[in-house]
Length: 219
Length: 350
Image (cartoon, rainbow over all chains, first blue to last red; front, side, top):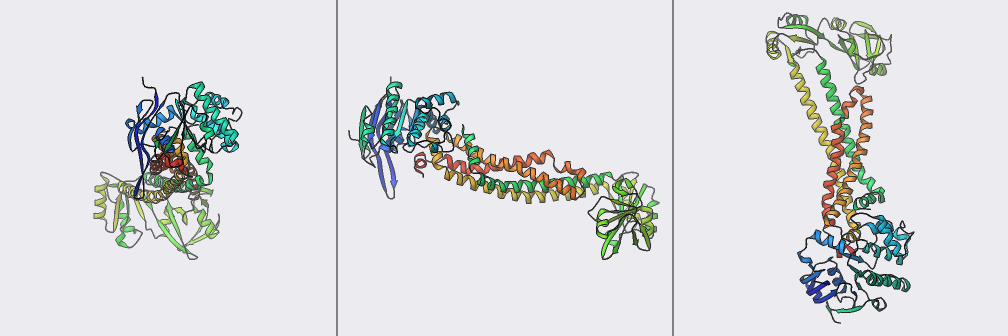
């Protein structure tokens, strides 16, 4: 039985930049187990964001083999990829990326196929946002917005959460609180979590820290 | 909250832009409604008018004769033809009064003259009353006769005075403008015989006349339709423009939607829904304004009884449906652009 949530085998991602080609991923080999909590660190340009984009099927590798929950994404249609993102992956972004015209509750319900407001309210309650269901993102603090974003990521019960600098725009207190939430999700619910971060304090919540440089894992 | 509600929210959020986009569609739809509606209504009015004449042939002076009236001898020849019966003569005279030409029409059936005030005899229409300041009891001189106005009729489009046909014929020196007759046998054959046997006259069958009217009105409908469609087209172009700007402005939002698992078809659908909704709403408002315009025009032209015919269901549904479908088509290109957005690039967009 395959229990790898993410599997990268000699994955390359090459971008043309003028006349030259830049390798954002240069033969990446990495396997993450189900239920793991991994922090990915590295300097700017090390390829960690590209790694996260490929892992979330937001971008496709130029070559190599990439599997998510045992499924090779290159063999999936665009629609299947979208549905995989919706059902099995939750994204948390540095800048929250909530839709400003929607309330917290509506933002959380957005990815749901069968709209279930009670479930959405339950997730928001778990994040300590009870009573803020109908607030717009602009009426919430940064920490609260990120908790709404995590609620949205969790609403379809994904097996994997991918977080791109989730504490990048938060103060220390809120950053710690967000990392605690992710840690609890991993420990209590068994959700696999990958966090890309510059912040060693945030990375310390993970069970494993991976360092990247020049498109490959160095440690 | 689904994507369709989100699309609806986008329209509400940018009220002024949505309103300006719809303005083009509203103007197009209203123009289409008024032009086609009034044309369709007047077509019905003309057809009704033509059909109401109980005749097979209309005999009048041939255009080559240079006169609008037939003399006694010609009339007598026509009346003596055994193929013809049930004669109805009409004489139309004109007289210049104070530099303005006034028409006097011989009337056989006073029911056709919608008298609003007074009685039959010498009936001026409202336009004549307004133009010359005439009222019941006023005197009008035509040729060597003086007529006393006995009534006022509703028509206002041209300057007409209705008098008894016998009186009109007498004033015209026993001459007649047209004779409407029934025929024994095929009207077309009889028409040929009339033109052969009586020189200087033209005989037109009712079906020829109806066809002629039909062709004229069809051409008018086509012409008006083309003009109004151009107006609608301008509106549709503004939908393309607005939707493209909307897609550009919402690049990041669309990127987020794709990242959280919305399919390209769902993204396309929401853009098409938004553009279609703009078209539908613009079409409904345009048709409503068009109907108001038709009511105003029908009242001004005294065509109230044809008002229903000016706003047929096919036209209302056609204009609203057309505006909606064209707007959806206008949203196709922006929706394709939206669905082709690279998620990573879109998420980086400020």
